[in-house]
Image (tube, rainbow, N blue to C red):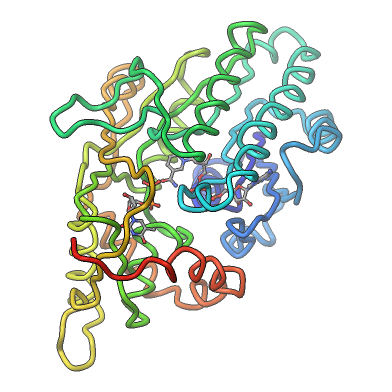
Length: 358
Ligand code: NAD
Ligand code: TYD
């Protein structure tokens, strides 16, 4: 079986659902169920005996030791993390605890388990660490996209904590020979994306008739990848990646934020026109920028394409349409995740961001 951490979050739940749709190998899913973890995402697996869900912390050594010994996984995929930059600015502690200390404790437990495996199982074992392009910092407008040898220069508490975890993972290969692989992926979007991040926030705010808050001048660039394509890249890395290597994953799809917001508005105008015939674009509101806001990320995915034959299946046009249709068809999921703690976060992040000129 495989052992997934953070599999009730956005990417992790898409990964678990995709894995079990494709093959019969069971999944043990360890997730702390923070505000970002949601068992609803896995509702389709409720009576599926191939999915074993355990609520717990990657930093709980006794629990992880016990699960590893009992279930003997051949692969670990570590998605568990605090993942939102704005939350890391308001409260970095949880990022240090989970992303750095938690990853360290997980690595220690895995090292002990792996060390005791018989030779063939030890050889075949893989630890896949799921990371982000944000560890590379911000690119100038004309600079080449990030390759795997780009120096790390993280700028937010989130990206700094992910960078620290990447370094620990790397060191466990170099020092102990643990067969680790790291993926550094660009911004994902798709179903089950928690509506604190740009694309789902814009969709749910638009549908509720609320302002669409664009930070600063809206010209910051991100490189967007449909979540299903990120999951297929991770499956490919498990199958064929070389231990000790890192793989950048991206969609060759750089876009300024304002263009993303306008695309969301245009698709909603088509699929769910507003009463009165006005465009959702009227809700776009420029607000105070994020402190330390990275200007541009862009991924060169040449290595994973060349070495592992991976390519994204979706274009941005197909992926964003699918995503918006998913949100339109899953209004009850959206309503359930917008609980009291969500509303508190929205007030914390946006109340002080009064409208400003772009
Ligand atoms: P998410 O915030 O939606 O989900 C994170 C999950 O981890 C949640 O289910 C949460 O309950 C769980 N978790 C948090 N702390 C935990 C702990 N201590 N122990 C066990 N579980 C814990 O995040 P996501 O967007 O699905 O991202 C998953 C991973 O992919 C993260 O490591 C993130 O850094 C990385 N990543 C994300 C993106 C993106 O665009 N979302 C892009 C590249 C890489
Ligand atoms: P986000 O989805 O938080 O991902 P990340 O910061 O990890 O790239 O944000 C994507 C971009 O959208 C980023 O440049 C910040 C911007 N943004 C807004 O303009 N308004 C918002 O309300 C949010 C959440 C993000």
